[in-house]
Image (cartoon, rainbow, N blue to C red; front, side, top):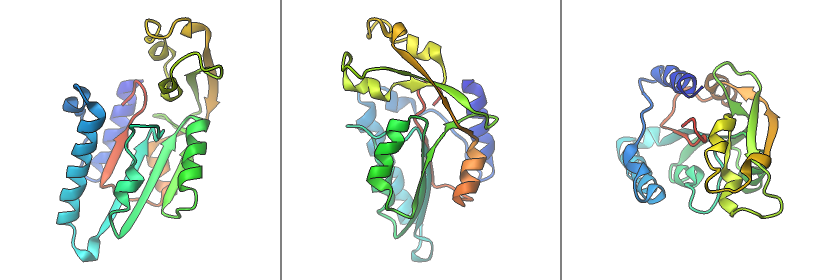
Length: 196
């Protein structure tokens, strides 16, 4: 499954002469800080390259759950005079938060879907934490792979009995970009548990 998503992403990115690669440095001691600084650096460099006639910024974020410590691409995008973005998440709670936060912004599309290689609906696995048994970060733990959720058994006692399965509408990267009217991207970010 992971290879199919990476291959699909690279096929879509090849059209704009880009390729997805892992940023291993961001996985070290302070991934959130490292990634935020790298994104700010990249966006700053992009702004310097763009002329006033082309001061636009286009982005696609797959896995757009925003919680404390997460990067908010919309805030970064708003540094440009012309921006357009698509936020995609498979979790209905995440989509609800995004709609409350950005729903009035006509330049931002919020898509409730799972990105799959073939665009077919998918099973999303998440953890029922309605009783607050686990820490809040568990809300962000969902995946198209049940095995990925089960990897947290050592940290989350009894998690195998609290897994929730939800059918989520499937979309491809190409169908999301087409529906959003975006033909090229300045930033493509994936935070899809176990598939980024």
